[in-house]
Length: 433
Image 1 (cartoon, rainbow, N blue to C red):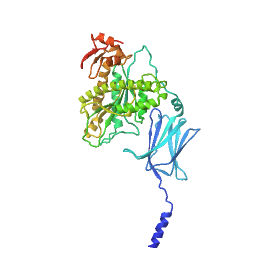
Image 2: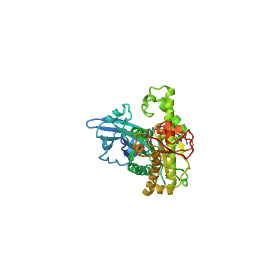
Image 3: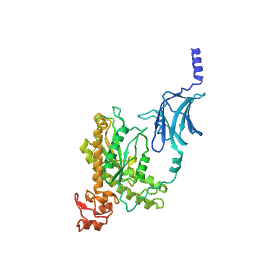
Image 4: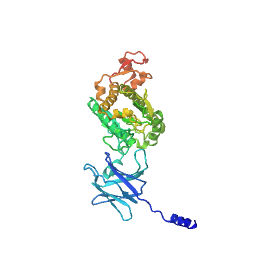
């Protein structure tokens, strides 16, 4: 027994030989502003990056790694990568070399496992020239005065790329079906006179949530519509829902914008917060958010009403939550959960092009109805359409005048009102600005 114990002790004292990390796959995504490489790894990895010139290359050394997959072929239209190759070094490290079309600014990080993927090493490549431009402060495009414009609808297909979203039992990914619905909605908006669609995500790639907001604001969107497909552990749960930002979400975002107001030029209706004291900046932001939330709620109600005609809705009324993509203080924003992809029947519907078109038409119908009587001043819709407002619970004459940017007196005169009393359901004619 003593001999066995000594042998075991000797074995335990021997240095352990580290098992190589298996690199199982490499995926390459090409969003508009960078290229992303994702290595699927069996365990966390240690790695180093360095660049070479003449010709341009990026070298990725992955410590004690073994390549088990097949190197992907790089499409000719990839903006930064020409080809990819690999080899083993004498020390057991795996060297991956990217042959580049130009110099790049690389960033890398590791990700822990989630529901869809295991350990990952992510390498993002940015065009150095574009990166230099992005460092400059960005201001919104000026609106040309005296020229009527289209109402801009920003359409955001949720998830994408490395973030597939929910997955149905038949293997349907949320990112795929919502992009199909978003494209159909964009086609409908493009056919609508006086409206212009802007696709936030145009393909299968990842976009950060704040980046989605920024893209909508850069295009001076009048509405932001984010399209998703819900999931739940109980496959019997079904139905569509429409969300707007919660008051708590609005408050947390207001605090963030106020804290960073020196970098927030043009964030509130074209007014910079940089030179305002705390009280005035807070009031300006509160006013902007209050109007935006009110408009968001009305649009969401119109969309939900039409989704009820397409199929079952999960909730009878508009819901509120702190979704990041809904937090722009000056762009009315709604998030549409089209169905539960975890429900087999609804997954089947989401894959059906005819049902996708029905969902897109329902969303379009709600958008059309809202802007028919709430067209922003200076737009073609406001110029051509007769403006009227059907009063709802909570409306006041002063609130309606402010929304349409007309004087209280002109609103009274146009409707032959002697005072400010109005009733729910009353149709008010909106005078020209």
